Image (tube, rainbow, N blue to C red; front, side, top):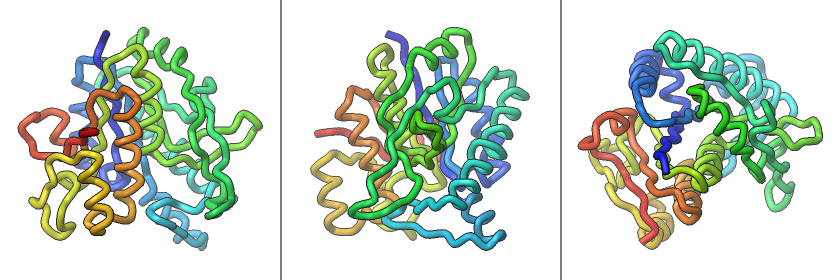
Length: 259
């Protein structure tokens, strides 16, 4: 089976033009099939504040009311997604920007309102791999934003880490899948104020211990939950770190393992 790389980049990379330019150039040069998934929560929060829409987060996840959904759709599926695709085209990589609605690629269900009401937030229930594989076979690289739909005409804000994990899991049936979460830190840190305090290997037992000790907390919890969910569902490799780990295998980062 062919190897495929699913790479997710966070909002701080998206927001840093220099870092994003370097990443997209390197991403364009990856020879194996690849898929890019991007966040953009920081930019969405900035725009929300500018136009007077409150930003509410619970356990690292965004609460999405109707106004926030409008902002998320404009920012994720519009401004960020199309700018990234334009830059990839300039790097001679033929890419297509997608939300989960496009070609019915990712279907979600609205998260139940209990115990916490997150509003118009979706949990992925199906990834249409036939469309994704058709694009890949024609040398077109999918670029997914964090918007999906419920097949009833409703858009849903969906965690980009979750989208990356679910796409990787779905493709694991026909590919050897590698999942990379790139953000501004060197990996999962033992001390968030010390950039070199990287925890280089985390298994499931270690993760539960670090979470109990609150060394891992807030937004890192849903990220690692997605990592282990992927590993439990036939994804071969999951790594967390800066964009440098994509091109430099010696660059220190965090690798995740079940045992």
